[in-house]
Length: 269
Image (cartoon, rainbow, N blue to C red; front, side):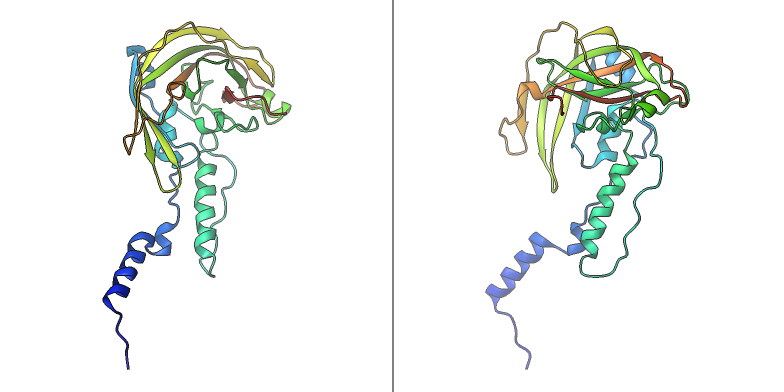
């Protein structure tokens, strides 16, 4: 004889389905870096304001991080293999694959210039040496900033690729920032990103950290809200730096200009 669920049991089951859903729906959906980059950045910076940028860190890279530079080199080498769709751990293996595939496709995006790893790098994606290309970096402009120019994985790769020689450094501040709470991570949505000041800097041709001098500037008013109405983003987290390539040290083999890292973080030994 078939037993029927009581109303309280049905209610609990409905809640479980509502809040957990099908296990396959929980698999991370990769956002691959397939866009060409944000070609509007030069004109927006010249006008003095970028309307909006969103930063998810190492999540949803292809959807958002491509907007943080005018171009980027497409991924090289072989991507991760698709796992077999069998076994109880198939969803977990698929989840790992989706994340790895996303990061592989974005290996030369701006994310690689802010991931704390000097062996990875943003590389511009133009057929020439990339003069005029721009990338935008999250950094606290009230503190000293460092840059590791070139592809810093090793000396051979450093010399093989172009390194920026002269760059234009522009400091900017969002007038408003909003915290977005996602399934896997939290994001910051920057609005009305306003140019504060800029100047030119000549970098040394060294495979290592060097100071990145910032132009003198004055901070602007700033407001922060989150999805729940709480001001959670501090003013020092509202500032950004745009770097424009003006000239390069030519590589011995490749014509791609790279920047490994730009950071306020202490140097890792």
